[in-house]
Amino acid sequence: MNRILAILSIAILITGCAGTPHLTSPNGKIALDINQDSTTTLTVKYVNGNSSENLFTISSLGVMTSDSANVSTNFSFKKTTPGVKSEYTMLTGKKSVCTNEYNEYEFASDDIEGVSMILRIYNDGITLRYVTTPDSPIVGEITQYTIDADKKRWMQRYDPGYERFFPEQTGHDQKDDRWGYPALVEFSDSTWGLFTEAAIEKENCASLLKATDNESEYAVEWASSASCAATPWRVVIIGSLNDIVESTLVTDVSPEARIDTSWIEPGVASWIYWAHNHGSKDYQILKQYIDLADTLNLPYTLIDAEWDEMSNGGDINDVAAYAASKGVKPLIWYNSSTGWINGAPGPKFRLNKPEDREKEFAWLEDNGFAGVKIDFFPGDGQETMNYYIDLLESAAKHHLLVNFHGATVPRGWQRTYPNLMSVEGVYGAEWYNNAPILTNRAAAHNATLPFTRNVIGPMDYTPCTFSWIRNIPTSPATATSWH
Image 1 (tube, rainbow, N blue to C red):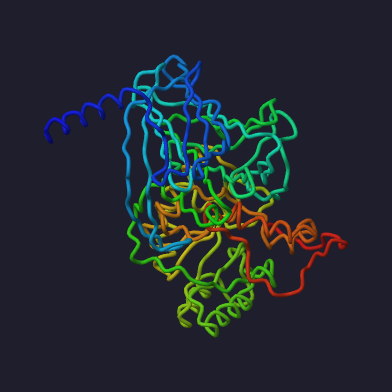
Image 2: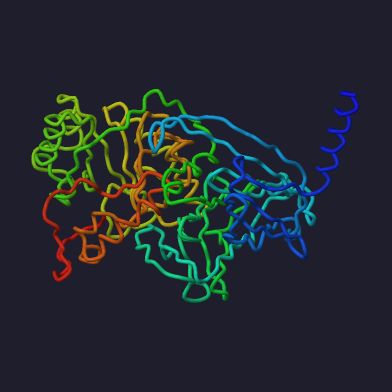
């Protein structure tokens, strides 16, 4: 009898696999309905007891491949991998030990052989990506979100440096408006969603959200051309505001650490910028900030831009020697020489070529420098993504921490390359110094950041400024700054 029951159970399981299963998170609170009337779409629901709430629809799914410009918009269920669960550690971020738990569903393209859509449903969100075979690379996608126009949202107009506000709004203004990640939506009093992406590799470009002629629709738009075997993960964190803030979903879907981490020591640095915007040209002032770090037992001091023009009794070699005598490890600034170049501060063109970067980073390691701050990147295209990753890999080889400034927002590299300490990508406190634009909007902006930008990764906000704000709303912008 038991054997007959076992055979019947197997038969039922196999029969169930022929159709699309019920798509849910491990705890059952997030569910997806799939519709395949003409093209494949997904409706995302939040389940509370016996009732469920429709949150938004992924109203377009699909990719384009280089194989005769084929387009895939239809997918059929292929297999499920339920109950995947693992743990990983982080050196920085919200948690030292993170839990990665999800149900995974794979769908095969009905239109292009070898193309699949991978869907993971977590207890705090959903992620999806497209993968293909090497002989048919993906060259574009047509993923699109439909969100009821009357839902409140906090979204930032796209800017390559991600230095804009997140104003409260509903719908969008007009077709072709572009919006950067992350984007926060209030679906109901207790349910929210944060849209972003993660796990960008060298073959990828980043993406943004492009408004369509329907005020409810946002299409995923690639920032440049690219050709890839797998797209980045499209990520939507879902739940209460607490769930949004606490989520590690961006790093959950990102590749595990690819570098040795035994040497990495996060810590606080003294920094010259607020009091002396161009002070890194002055050896004597830099010595004062090394002394400050020594007095306060801070492990690091940050030498900012224009140090290649240093005078007043010493140069960068003297600074390195003085810091070593005090037991303070210096971090040092570079221009990426890919974004703002003409009229921008230096040093420039020291990191662009692999051989020059290797020489510079080796010199830093040999002279006791602990990290680099690299500034002024031009955007989110594939070439720039490759440059970011090259810098992280090369810096790790020479035991250098990294801070990207004037840069894109985090997309999970903080897990893959744990030497990445922080990224700007925010309208931060330096703007109290630069111009009055932030000052009279700071309260609302700062109260929004914990639920938007800071959710997805480390945020170089230019913190620890305890002096008088230099530009109040009624004053002219008198400060000279390039940050």
